[in-house]
Every structure is written in C-alpha cells, then in structure tokens.
Image 1 (tube, helix red, strand yellow):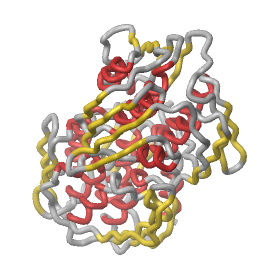
Image 2 (cartoon, one colour; image 1 turned 30 degrees about the vertical axis):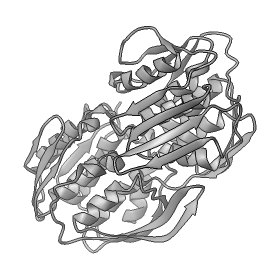
Image 3 (cartoon, helix red, strand yellow; image 1 turned 180 degrees about the vertical axis):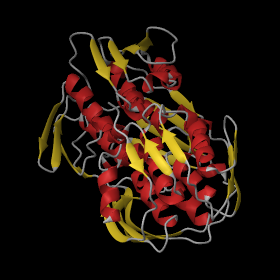
Image 4 (cartoon, one colour; image 1 turned 135 degrees about the vertical axis):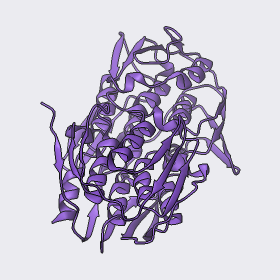
Length: 437
C-alpha cells in the first residue's frame, strides 16, 4: 500500500543548525570513477540513496568490489577495461545521471550490455547520449530513444569532436568518460553546466584542459591507460539544501544554518535567483576541497520577497531547484517569469507541468507553456483547500516541493508515495522533524 504523508499545519518559527546528506552528483561520480581504478578508493558521507545504490550495484556487476565499513564506503575497481565474458543487464533504477554516465563507461565493452531503468526513467530521451557514443564506435541495437538500450562497445574507441548544445552535464560527462578510454584527444564544446567531472579529473591529474568563455566551455581530454584511486569526503547537496532554504524563507521569524554544503559556482543558480528575489542568504566558512567550493549556508526569513524576470543564464545551474523557486515566486510581490525550461520536462516527471498543477491546487494563478511559466505572486496568500498529490511518477522532488508548500501555504494535504524520497534524500523527513523540534 502506498504510504501517504498528511500535513494540515503551518510550520512554527525555528532557529536550527542542520547537515544534509552527501551530494548526489558527486556520490554517483565518485562511485563510477572509483570503478576505473584498480586501487582502493574510500568515500565518507556517501549518499545512501536509491540512485547511488543503483550505481554501486552496476559497478559490482561489471566486476568492482564494494565494501561498507561503518561511516565509509570502499571500492576496488577493475581498471579501464572490463573483463566481461557474457551479456549483462544493468539496472539504473530511477537515475538519469547513472544511466547516461555509465553508457560512456561502456564504450570499450566487448560484450553486449543491456541497460534498463524504472517506468519513469524509461520515458526519458537517451538519443543525446547514443549519438556521440556512436561516433566513438559504439553500436546500439536500433535508433530508439528510450530504455531498454543494448550497447556493444569497441576495443579501441576513436576520439571525437563533440558539441553539447543543451547545457547537460550528464551528456558532457558521458562523453568525457568515453574519452578517457579512447585513443588520441577528444574535443568538447559544451554549453555551460555543472563542472564536477572536470574538477575531479583535474584533481586526479588526468590529461584534461579546460578553457572558458561567456557561453561555452572548451574541453580537451586525452585517453589514458590507468587512473589512481580517489579518496573523498563528500560535501552536502545544494539541491537537498534548497528545500530547507525555501522553507526558512517562507516561514515566520526563522533562521537556519546548513553546514558543509557544496557551493560549486556551477550549482548555485538557486542562491543567485533567490537573492535577486530579496532572500537573506549568506555563505560562511568558505573553503576549497579537491577543487570544489564548500561553505556553511545561513538563511533567514524574508518578508519582502519580490518577483523576478529570471535570466535563463541561471537555468543550468538551478535546474533541479526550480520547483521550490516557483514556491518563492508564488509568495513574492509581482509577476515572475521563467523561460527556456523545456529541460524540466526531461526529468523524472514533466516537472514544469507538475509545478503548474501544484500552484493551481494552492490557488496561485500561473500560465505555463512547454518551456516557460509565469507566476502571479501573492505574499499574503494561504489556502484551506484539501489537496492530494498523486500519480507524479514518484518524482522525489515533486514530493519534497509539495511538503514545503503544505507547511508554508496551509491546507489539508495528502502526499502519496512517501518512499519516493529514497531516490535522492532518504533522511528528508527526519531532517524536517529535527527542524520542527
């Protein structure tokens, strides 16, 4: 039976300090990169979500050894070549990051490998990955865009030139992984997106060069024969933090400090957008850690939030946080406009459509298209409606958005599929209860 979260209260004022779980993007990248080293890699604060556990299951099938010891995870990988003797099936579950990135790692597999995923993931478009991987020499059963996909790698992948147009870090990283296994230099021209993989490659002293201009990053990667191990203490996830940032902003007389969060400049579009809307947010104790910028985030309630005509230059760096940004727009004075967001409908669910639905449930006027949304904010708006959230393809971020909306707009809410948070933030409700104590 589906577990349902029931909320029929406003959150009380609070002053708290919290930690959030390890960054999901970094956790998955650590797992996959560690699988390419024959030496032992160790991670602390690895996110133990379904997406990360799916990554671990996949690399174990491919031959890696994985050990959990109290507060750490250890991986001994296979090196850059897999010793695969029969056709395998890898299950990416709900994780688009895992599914796209691991295809890049399979570029030199000498046996056919079948990649599958859950119902939600199987609806997503993988042609943006298969097209460049074909240029490396990989073979796919057909031109189909969706999972399941069968890939047969090539013993000596050829280096390629690749132009990434969408600002997708997943597509870029899949090509970067394939480039490590190729002969010669691969050249990538990529629209701005999160750069975790580039930073990890640089830290590992892999042969990567990156040049940047206003709109694009130009990346050159040479193939390698081996990589060293990666020991890593994974910082907190900014995407998970965003739900509590917005909860604090929209609550009365509240203050929250979130410790040790990854504030990589390619990930903090949410902070930049919220500050433009009048949010009181500060970074404290900033430091560099293996290429990443880490900080404590201090946020306070904000009474005078204002609407925004959001520059689309922030889209890539805030793509996972727009759902809660829309809640702030709903409580802001004026009309907010967000454009060029078709990528939101390429996520676990059609998120732009679902954001509009939830705003309608609350009673906030909005106009949505295939790639934009206009939100008519009302700082004093609350609701007493009975609201049920269901049939949203168990999208973890829809569940968490609905929870924050319930606690800040009022109403009598029934939010289905409580287990959906296990995808990215299993301790979301535990963290919320700690704030409410």
